[in-house]
Image 1: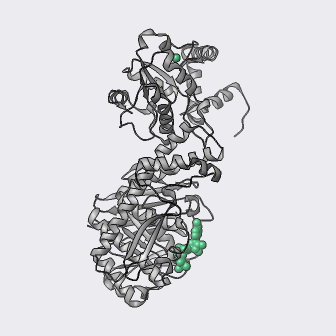
Image 2 (image 1 turned 135 degrees about the vertical axis):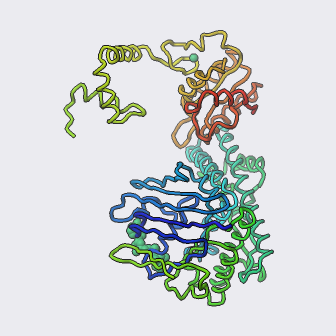
Image 3 (image 1 turned 90 degrees about the horizontal axis):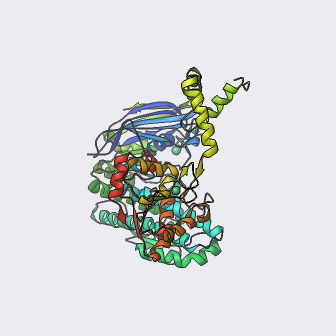
Length: 367
Length: 199
Ligand SMILES: Nc1ncnc2c1ncn2[C@@H]1O[C@H](COP(=O)(O)OP(=O)(O)OP(=O)(O)O)[C@@H](O)[C@H]1O
Ligand SMILES: [Mg+2]
Ligand SMILES: [Zn+2]
């Protein structure tokens, strides 16, 4: 059983005025010149998961310019939870509304049936840039295991924003802080537990795998101090931190400051100090481990979106990646500028060529 | 559209501002009222005038009625030691419709929200604390929404009542997340109340 989109249609989504694609569960190789609309196409697929998609863009930005009226995406999903008809509509720049099997649904419900993870070129600097990007990457993987992670994040963020406002306004009412810290501790402990459990599963999947990609040793670290994992301890830590937090005007302890620390396992070298190609290989390794673990857990590998993944890989590595994706049975949507980048896949994949004609993207199904 | 401000147009504009109505449905409603002038429009106008003159908030609990103290607060039979705290008057009315709750209410008038500039003094929280002693309350039921703001408010109140040795409970799970009491059917409210859990 695999998780796959079998039918996708886009209307007025970025450079695509109208596109309709029927595919099967095999990997989808997408090629075409720069600016043709390849990334836009997989961005549309990335919306089949909670959040704002792989560019983290607003729904307004996704509306096809210059009309910018709104857009619609529909897709048929097959997977362990049975066939699902999913559609997204954004009107007048409003956030997308979600319909699952003709019933309006929320992001949490979407996360339960559709699991999607991605690698995009912007992540090439993930290991050397700020903690935020790594945290977001980790949360995306975590979300694929624990759909409720999205709700816990929303709850935590909301309570923290309330607390930060009290701090900024120098409100001193201890009961008010206590009420908010209780909720931050509750959802915060869940966030940490989910993330830790995700790392454990990735570790196990890496240990069992036969793969050409290097294993990473992963740990949760705090940018400062330590993070008590238990709810009560987290609540106390927040209470103790009030005075200092008031000086800073924001909350200084908590899972919103968690960072992901990675080490190239066989070499013992921190990911940030590895070569560009090695850093990329570590990310690919994590995505593949995530897919393996989820195949066991959820019964199917997630849908993978790999934007320009072939660009930094030599022919051997490329063949290895394709081999592992095919073995996993993952519907991986991959982009590249030329079809030769996918030569090693042969008949194990299906091919889409994207071209630009008169300011419109066109998607052609190729053999 | 040309808008000469005839009384009829004014009425349509006002009606269109009501929750659940838009310009189209307001026009339909006004035409209907005019057609039923004697049976509907005149009595409606009279009822509205009367409500405009007499409606007020109960000084004790925040319920909306026509007297300074509402009938629930004056009914001694309802002083059974139970006090149900709700966010809005609509929630109180929803509980009353279900008919299961025999105690008294306290309407906060909203929830705590630092981001929206709503603090304890903007809600009827000081009044609530005063009522506990004055009305011999033994159990407070926090029937607040399962939103972050609703739950923050619940924790805030619980925090201050705990030292006073009052039993505290909240409505049972099954009240949908962010779902307001007003939207629940009577059976659901009754079940949530009967299965309330101690905090
Ligand atoms: N909202 C929008 N409306 C119309 N066009 C848009 C919108 N957003 C982006 N575009 C255009 O879509 C085009 C294709 O973008 P996309 O990123 O998909 O290209 P690509 O095929 O991935 O190219 P590359 O190989 O360079 O990565 C760009 O020229 C971009 O300006
Ligand atoms: Mg691109
Ligand atoms: Zn009253």
